[in-house]
Structures are given as C-alpha cells and as structure tokens.
Image: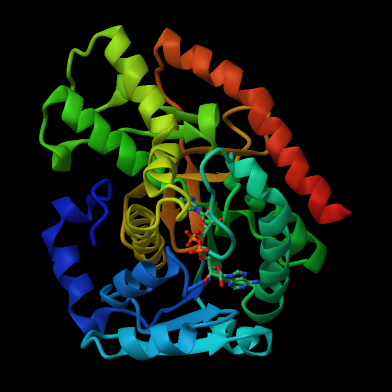
Length: 339
Ligand code: NAI
C-alpha cells in the first residue's frame, strides 16, 4: 500500500529502501476490534505491510482465529491474537501505532452520532489502557462518531498525563478515498492521478471535500460539484443502506485505515513529505480545538497542520455551516469524558 500523496512515489530510492527489510525499523502495530467487519480486512492489509514487524490483534472475542489465519501469510510481521480485557495490556505494550476500529457500526436510519452511547464508553476504556501500556503510541481512531471519539481520547490522555496532541488522529481517509473515486468518475480522469483534500470532520455536512483544489483539474459545472460534495458526505450512508442492516463500510474502510496507518509508519520512519488529511488537534484553521485538514506526518506524529488553502465560495459556505455541528460533537465528547 502506498500513499499517493506522499512523495515516496516520486522518490524511488526511498521506496526501494522501505521495502528491503534490513533497513526498515521494527514497528509494532496493534488493532483493537480486530475481529470485526473492519478489523479483519484491516488485519489482513497490515499483515501485507512490510513496515510492520509485529502485529497485535485484540478484540473481546474471536481474535485467536483471526490471528491464526492471518499469521499463516508469509510476510514480515509476527502476528499474535489477544482476547479479553486481561490480555489488552500485552496487546498494547510496545506498540508504535494503535488502530481502533472497535465498536458498533450504523444500521439504516442511524447517524454516526446515534452510536455515541455505546462507542464512547468503548473508546474511553481502550484509551485508558493505551495511556497505561503504550503512552507514546500514535493512535488512529476509526470508531465513530470520530468527531466525538477523538476529543474523548484526548481528554482520557490528558487525565492520565500522557496526552500528546501530535499523536492522536481521527481517521477520515475514507472520505478522501471516496472523494477521489467519485471525482475521477465524474471528471473522467484516471483515478490513480486524483487528489482531493477533505477537511472539517467525519459526519454528514462536517465532511467538506475541497473539489476546487482537486487534481487533475477538470471544469465541472457547479451542480456537478454540489452533487459530488453531497455524495462524498453521504458515502457512508450509501453503504449502510446497500448493506441493509448488516453494518457500514468495512472493506473500503479497512483499505483507508491501512493507507493512513502506512502513512503514519512512513512518518515515524522519517520518510519526508508524507501528507494525509486527518482529524487532529488544530489551532490555526478555525476556533475549534479539533479539525480535519491536510497534515504532514513525521517522526513524532503530526509535524505540521497545513492551511486549508484557497476555497470556492461554495466551500467557504460549507465551512461556515459545518462549524456549529462539529463544535457540538466535540463538546459532547469532552463532556462525556469528564463526567
Ligand atoms: P463490527 O461490529 O463489525 O466490529 C466491531 C468489533 O469491535 C467487534 O469485533 C467487537 O467485538 C469489537 N469490540 C466491541 N467492544 C470492544 C472492546 N471494548 N474492545 C475491543 N473490541 C471491541 O463493526 P465495524 O463495521 O468493524 O465498525 C467498527 C467501527 O468503525 C464503528 O464504530 C463504525 O461506525 C466505525 N467506522 C468508521 C469509519 C470511518 O471512516 N472512520 C467508516 C466505517 C466504520
């Protein structure tokens, strides 16, 4: 898996070095919720990633089977399954990156916020364990509602005295993946050349794709841009409805989660110019404490939160209307963590 927006693609020597095992550092990745719809294909994709040397698969049930299965794949990493809370510490110890797709997914008619009551508690307890067993790990939060679970994680880490804002990421990569796919289809350009930043948050109108910055450039009509924006915002719901009660996006999410974790690993390993969109602590963009934007990844996690760049009037309007909703979701997370 290669991150298109990283310059690794344009630096063949780095890419080659990254794929020759001697020069690649040891990296442990833990997946929490590894037996789930996202967790299983994500475990598979992380097993295929040559930057990973140890893969810890944790869930409340089912991980011995997933680990035995994935562990037979003849790639670099050693795989271990951990099941139940008493094994969580072992799963986390020594982790460089912790990916969290634990929790319940949406059913038709539900918003991401409807998941809050169950997932907030799960995230809180998992983050309490992260603070204890691997306080320096980079955390990739997939569990929804991301707009609230990331602030919850931050509060838990603050209370434990381990919070490092550079190492906490809400995974919004699937919004970028969708925006790229939908744009390529509409603009009739090769999808592998497409790049589109997606900013804001990760729910409904808080998802703001910046198609005015999309490359390759295409002269799409205003109504096409509006339709693409709406489809990107409703991409998750499209899958939830098509699955008709069997959950939300799992395969495309696993792909997106693997892509983002790979970018984090590259950053940790010192690969230059790795840039991905993510929901992070943010002070330069809006008055909100968390915001998704392009982020440069480095040896310590976030190296730089990048500015939004020039936006169309339509996007500026989208930014204005998303702020109150995103603010409320952030505050809801903070309040939950502190009660
Ligand atoms: P799923 O129900 O198939 O799997 C969730 C897994 O989490 C299950 O295996 C369950 O046993 C496990 N789990 C529950 N409590 C746990 C705990 N305390 N510790 C460890 N594991 C625990 O759900 P699915 O489809 O994999 O979705 C997982 C989450 O990802 C949901 O919250 C969903 O909304 C979110 N999601 C996020 C997306 C994003 O773009 N950020 C996209 C799609 C889904």
